[in-house]
Length: 244
Image (cartoon, rainbow, N blue to C red; front, top):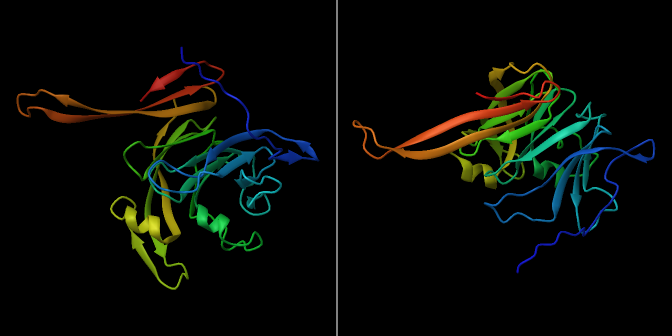
Protein backbone atom coordinates (compact mmCIF):
# COMPACT_ATOMS: atom_id res chain seq x y z
CA UNK A 1 0.00 0.00 0.00
CA UNK A 2 1.35 3.39 -1.03
CA UNK A 3 1.06 6.26 1.40
CA UNK A 4 1.68 9.94 0.85
CA UNK A 5 3.12 12.16 3.55
CA UNK A 6 3.24 15.93 3.76
CA UNK A 7 5.75 17.61 6.03
CA UNK A 8 7.12 21.11 6.50
CA UNK A 9 10.63 21.76 5.21
CA UNK A 10 11.03 25.49 5.83
CA UNK A 11 9.23 28.40 7.47
CA UNK A 12 10.01 32.06 8.12
CA UNK A 13 8.29 35.34 8.94
CA UNK A 14 7.94 36.71 5.42
CA UNK A 15 5.73 39.73 6.21
CA UNK A 16 5.21 41.82 9.32
CA UNK A 17 3.52 44.97 10.58
CA UNK A 18 4.55 46.86 13.73
CA UNK A 19 7.10 44.12 14.45
CA UNK A 20 4.37 41.46 14.45
CA UNK A 21 3.60 38.82 11.78
CA UNK A 22 1.06 39.96 9.21
CA UNK A 23 -1.13 37.96 6.85
CA UNK A 24 0.64 36.43 3.86
CA UNK A 25 -2.14 36.61 1.27
CA UNK A 26 -0.40 34.97 -1.68
CA UNK A 27 2.72 33.13 -2.76
CA UNK A 28 3.98 31.25 -5.81
CA UNK A 29 7.15 29.76 -7.25
CA UNK A 30 8.91 32.10 -9.65
CA UNK A 31 9.08 29.54 -12.44
CA UNK A 32 6.93 27.46 -14.75
CA UNK A 33 7.06 24.00 -16.28
CA UNK A 34 8.27 25.12 -19.70
CA UNK A 35 11.64 26.60 -18.79
CA UNK A 36 14.70 25.61 -16.78
CA UNK A 37 14.28 28.53 -14.38
CA UNK A 38 15.57 28.20 -10.81
CA UNK A 39 13.06 26.38 -8.61
CA UNK A 40 14.28 27.95 -5.38
CA UNK A 41 12.79 31.42 -5.95
CA UNK A 42 9.45 32.34 -4.38
CA UNK A 43 7.30 35.47 -4.65
CA UNK A 44 5.09 36.48 -1.73
CA UNK A 45 2.57 39.24 -1.03
CA UNK A 46 1.22 40.34 2.32
CA UNK A 47 -1.04 42.65 4.25
CA UNK A 48 1.98 44.87 4.94
CA UNK A 49 1.60 46.30 1.41
CA UNK A 50 4.75 44.61 0.14
CA UNK A 51 5.70 42.04 -2.48
CA UNK A 52 8.93 40.14 -1.91
CA UNK A 53 11.24 37.85 -3.87
CA UNK A 54 12.84 35.09 -1.79
CA UNK A 55 15.55 32.51 -2.23
CA UNK A 56 14.34 29.62 -0.06
CA UNK A 57 17.94 28.53 0.53
CA UNK A 58 18.46 31.68 2.61
CA UNK A 59 15.39 33.44 4.00
CA UNK A 60 17.06 35.81 6.44
CA UNK A 61 16.09 38.68 4.15
CA UNK A 62 14.35 38.91 0.75
CA UNK A 63 16.32 39.28 -2.47
CA UNK A 64 14.06 42.16 -3.45
CA UNK A 65 11.12 44.06 -2.00
CA UNK A 66 8.46 46.28 -3.55
CA UNK A 67 6.73 48.37 -0.90
CA UNK A 68 4.00 50.98 -0.49
CA UNK A 69 6.61 53.73 -0.86
CA UNK A 70 7.19 52.52 -4.42
CA UNK A 71 4.21 50.92 -6.19
CA UNK A 72 2.12 48.64 -4.00
CA UNK A 73 -0.19 50.95 -2.00
CA UNK A 74 -2.41 48.19 -0.57
CA UNK A 75 -2.08 44.68 0.75
CA UNK A 76 -0.74 42.42 -2.01
CA UNK A 77 -3.41 39.75 -2.38
CA UNK A 78 -2.58 37.83 -5.57
CA UNK A 79 0.53 36.88 -7.55
CA UNK A 80 0.39 34.71 -10.65
CA UNK A 81 3.47 33.59 -12.58
CA UNK A 82 2.94 33.24 -16.31
CA UNK A 83 2.48 29.56 -17.29
CA UNK A 84 4.46 29.90 -20.55
CA UNK A 85 6.57 33.07 -20.60
CA UNK A 86 9.70 32.57 -18.56
CA UNK A 87 10.09 35.87 -16.75
CA UNK A 88 6.62 37.44 -16.65
CA UNK A 89 4.25 37.52 -13.69
CA UNK A 90 1.25 39.55 -12.54
CA UNK A 91 0.42 40.97 -9.13
CA UNK A 92 -2.73 42.49 -7.67
CA UNK A 93 -3.60 44.23 -4.43
CA UNK A 94 -6.29 46.01 -2.45
CA UNK A 95 -5.44 49.20 -4.34
CA UNK A 96 -7.43 47.76 -7.32
CA UNK A 97 -4.40 47.71 -9.63
CA UNK A 98 -3.12 44.74 -11.64
CA UNK A 99 0.58 45.09 -12.40
CA UNK A 100 2.80 43.12 -14.78
CA UNK A 101 6.48 42.52 -14.03
CA UNK A 102 9.65 41.09 -15.52
CA UNK A 103 11.26 39.24 -12.61
CA UNK A 104 14.75 40.09 -13.87
CA UNK A 105 14.16 43.71 -12.92
CA UNK A 106 13.56 42.60 -9.34
CA UNK A 107 16.43 40.14 -8.95
CA UNK A 108 19.22 41.59 -11.12
CA UNK A 109 19.43 45.14 -9.81
CA UNK A 110 19.95 46.79 -6.47
CA UNK A 111 16.89 47.42 -4.32
CA UNK A 112 17.62 51.14 -4.29
CA UNK A 113 17.26 51.46 -8.06
CA UNK A 114 13.55 52.24 -8.33
CA UNK A 115 13.74 52.87 -12.06
CA UNK A 116 14.69 49.25 -12.65
CA UNK A 117 11.91 47.96 -10.35
CA UNK A 118 9.02 49.64 -12.10
CA UNK A 119 6.22 47.40 -13.44
CA UNK A 120 5.92 46.76 -17.16
CA UNK A 121 2.31 47.97 -17.13
CA UNK A 122 -0.65 48.46 -14.81
CA UNK A 123 -4.41 48.66 -15.13
CA UNK A 124 -7.20 49.58 -12.69
CA UNK A 125 -9.82 46.81 -12.51
CA UNK A 126 -12.32 48.61 -10.27
CA UNK A 127 -11.97 46.45 -7.17
CA UNK A 128 -9.47 44.79 -4.88
CA UNK A 129 -7.67 42.00 -6.74
CA UNK A 130 -8.21 38.63 -5.06
CA UNK A 131 -7.48 36.18 -7.86
CA UNK A 132 -5.41 36.25 -11.08
CA UNK A 133 -5.59 33.41 -13.61
CA UNK A 134 -3.70 33.35 -16.90
CA UNK A 135 -5.56 31.85 -19.85
CA UNK A 136 -4.56 28.19 -20.45
CA UNK A 137 -3.80 28.69 -24.16
CA UNK A 138 -3.68 32.45 -24.87
CA UNK A 139 -0.54 34.00 -23.44
CA UNK A 140 -1.93 37.54 -23.51
CA UNK A 141 -5.21 37.06 -21.59
CA UNK A 142 -5.63 37.37 -17.82
CA UNK A 143 -8.76 36.70 -15.73
CA UNK A 144 -9.25 38.81 -12.59
CA UNK A 145 -11.57 38.40 -9.59
CA UNK A 146 -11.87 41.98 -8.34
CA UNK A 147 -13.96 41.69 -5.15
CA UNK A 148 -16.66 44.42 -5.12
CA UNK A 149 -15.78 45.28 -8.73
CA UNK A 150 -16.83 41.86 -10.04
CA UNK A 151 -14.62 40.16 -12.61
CA UNK A 152 -12.50 41.46 -15.47
CA UNK A 153 -10.64 40.03 -18.45
CA UNK A 154 -7.42 41.91 -19.18
CA UNK A 155 -5.60 41.85 -22.51
CA UNK A 156 -1.80 42.20 -22.57
CA UNK A 157 -0.14 43.42 -25.77
CA UNK A 158 2.75 45.30 -27.38
CA UNK A 159 5.72 44.06 -25.38
CA UNK A 160 8.68 46.39 -25.82
CA UNK A 161 11.94 44.48 -25.67
CA UNK A 162 15.47 45.67 -24.99
CA UNK A 163 18.87 44.00 -24.89
CA UNK A 164 20.64 43.50 -21.59
CA UNK A 165 22.18 46.97 -21.83
CA UNK A 166 18.83 48.50 -22.85
CA UNK A 167 20.48 50.25 -25.81
CA UNK A 168 17.83 49.20 -28.30
CA UNK A 169 14.08 48.69 -28.05
CA UNK A 170 11.74 46.87 -30.37
CA UNK A 171 8.01 46.21 -30.18
CA UNK A 172 7.05 42.55 -30.35
CA UNK A 173 3.74 40.70 -30.20
CA UNK A 174 3.40 38.62 -27.03
CA UNK A 175 2.19 35.46 -28.76
CA UNK A 176 4.13 35.52 -32.02
CA UNK A 177 7.47 36.43 -30.46
CA UNK A 178 7.56 34.33 -27.31
CA UNK A 179 11.16 33.27 -28.01
CA UNK A 180 12.31 36.90 -28.06
CA UNK A 181 10.40 37.71 -24.89
CA UNK A 182 12.11 34.86 -23.07
CA UNK A 183 15.61 35.98 -24.12
CA UNK A 184 15.40 39.77 -23.86
CA UNK A 185 14.67 42.12 -21.01
CA UNK A 186 11.15 43.52 -21.29
CA UNK A 187 10.88 47.29 -20.98
CA UNK A 188 7.10 47.73 -21.06
CA UNK A 189 3.80 46.42 -22.41
CA UNK A 190 0.18 47.53 -22.68
CA UNK A 191 -2.79 46.32 -20.65
CA UNK A 192 -6.49 47.05 -21.03
CA UNK A 193 -9.75 45.62 -19.73
CA UNK A 194 -11.65 43.94 -22.58
CA UNK A 195 -14.58 42.42 -20.66
CA UNK A 196 -16.42 43.00 -17.37
CA UNK A 197 -18.70 40.66 -15.43
CA UNK A 198 -20.76 42.36 -12.69
CA UNK A 199 -23.50 39.85 -11.81
CA UNK A 200 -22.05 39.11 -8.37
CA UNK A 201 -23.94 40.81 -5.53
CA UNK A 202 -20.99 40.61 -3.14
CA UNK A 203 -17.21 40.24 -3.32
CA UNK A 204 -15.94 38.12 -6.22
CA UNK A 205 -13.22 36.04 -4.59
CA UNK A 206 -12.71 33.15 -7.00
CA UNK A 207 -12.25 32.95 -10.77
CA UNK A 208 -10.85 30.39 -13.19
CA UNK A 209 -11.03 29.33 -16.82
CA UNK A 210 -13.05 26.40 -18.15
CA UNK A 211 -11.29 25.51 -21.35
CA UNK A 212 -10.97 22.36 -23.41
CA UNK A 213 -10.84 21.18 -27.00
CA UNK A 214 -13.12 18.45 -28.33
CA UNK A 215 -13.71 16.73 -31.65
CA UNK A 216 -17.09 17.36 -33.21
CA UNK A 217 -18.83 15.39 -35.94
CA UNK A 218 -20.53 18.01 -38.05
CA UNK A 219 -21.85 17.29 -41.51
CA UNK A 220 -20.01 20.33 -42.82
CA UNK A 221 -16.83 19.70 -40.86
CA UNK A 222 -15.99 16.08 -40.09
CA UNK A 223 -13.79 15.56 -37.07
CA UNK A 224 -13.45 19.31 -36.56
CA UNK A 225 -11.76 20.39 -33.34
CA UNK A 226 -13.94 22.72 -31.31
CA UNK A 227 -12.61 24.96 -28.56
CA UNK A 228 -14.82 25.55 -25.53
CA UNK A 229 -13.85 28.65 -23.57
CA UNK A 230 -15.77 30.12 -20.65
CA UNK A 231 -14.95 31.62 -17.27
CA UNK A 232 -16.26 30.61 -13.86
CA UNK A 233 -16.40 32.87 -10.83
CA UNK A 234 -17.80 32.81 -7.30
CA UNK A 235 -18.61 35.37 -4.63
CA UNK A 236 -18.56 35.33 -0.85
CA UNK A 237 -21.56 36.60 1.11
CA UNK A 238 -24.24 35.73 -1.45
CA UNK A 239 -22.75 32.24 -1.94
CA UNK A 240 -23.09 32.46 -5.72
CA UNK A 241 -21.21 30.92 -8.62
CA UNK A 242 -21.48 31.85 -12.29
CA UNK A 243 -20.29 30.43 -15.58
CA UNK A 244 -20.02 33.11 -18.24
